[in-house]
Each structure stands twice: as C-alpha cells, then as structure tokens.
Image (cartoon, rainbow, N blue to C red; front, side, top):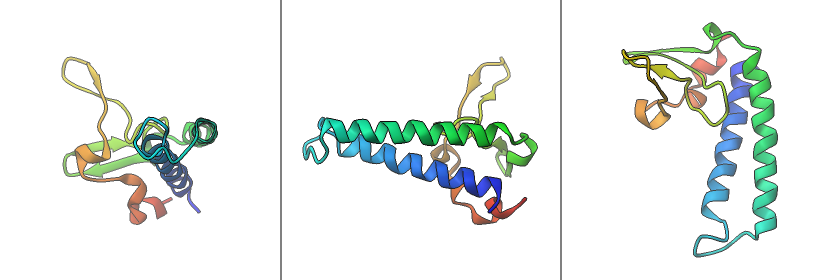
Length: 115
C-alpha cells in the first residue's frame, strides 16, 4: 500500500463520517442519530484527522503533486482540504475542491498506486 493510498483511505473515511454527521443528526428531519452518537462520530473524525495529518506531514509536496490540464495541485495538508492552498496574482490564498476541478485525487487509483 502506498502512502497516497493510506491518505486516500483516511480521506474517504473522514468524508463518509462527515456526511453521516451532517445528514443524520438531530437537526435534520429524520433524527436518526442521537447527540451522543454524533459526538462519537466527531471523535472518530478527529482521530482520523490526526493520523492523516501525521502521514501527510511526512510526505514531500513532490510526492503529493497532481498535474492536471488546469494546473498543478497538491494533496491537502489536512484531511478537511481536498487540495492545498493556492495563491492568486495578488498573493491571496484560496482553496480548490474536488468539485471545482471535477477530479478527486483520492478516487484515482492510477495516481494512488504511484510511489
């Protein structure tokens, strides 16, 4: 398993838990999960985030670089980012998402299998 595959697995787990917490919490109509369950999901998300951050921190940006027709991007430094921060011509930071690029690095098996 490559480091990128590990990051992808963590990212997918985090995103699934985030979807559950947002769509099945007591604030939504079905109220499938109690507040204590949502709290446990948030704790799991924090643990996943910590592991993701530790793994990503050990990787150079070169290893996390993605070249697309629209430009060069990097796997996010934190699990909550799809891609790392970019800067415009005025040096203002901005982030892009998988939706912005119509490409999810954590679903691209060819990219993930590269060492």
